[in-house]
Length: 195
Image (cartoon, rainbow, N blue to C red; front, side, top):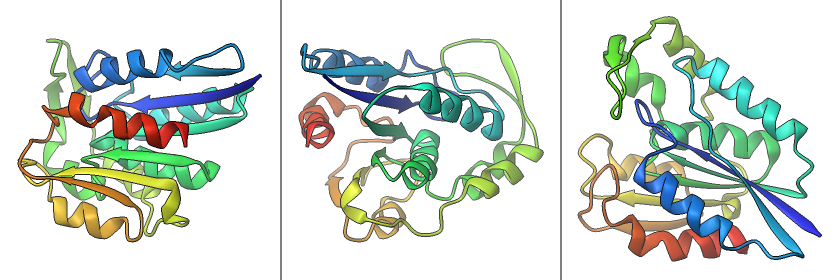
């Protein structure tokens, strides 16, 4: 029996209940057969990037899976780069914040998550934690799949595309940061996972 650990990392201020996370989870669970099982791991990430990565790394290291695939959206895509390099595994980046420290620096302070009113403090030290996780250049581009939307209202799709030279890329005309039409592109994600 072969096991694949599939790690899904949500974006900044998001959660495992995000539409893309839920959709991907359902599709991945449906792939499991008695000979080829998929283990789904989609944790609630913490405000601290270092604590988030430590938590995910601990889970991966305890897993008995034969292979690992990481999927991440936005800030989760930034974490995907770090983990895919660390474990030399497949990484799927959905509108990734490839330079997260720069993108999130203006957001230091108190804020709430998208799907809850609970405040959390995004501290200045977290920007340094993000800098420490920055991947300057990906290795083995064939391990990566980028989905980037030209209509992303928060991040520059050209910068994303340039960050993954030689990788499989799906550049969407229009769409948005959340990839509202993700259901249409999910089959391509699943195909890359199974490859």
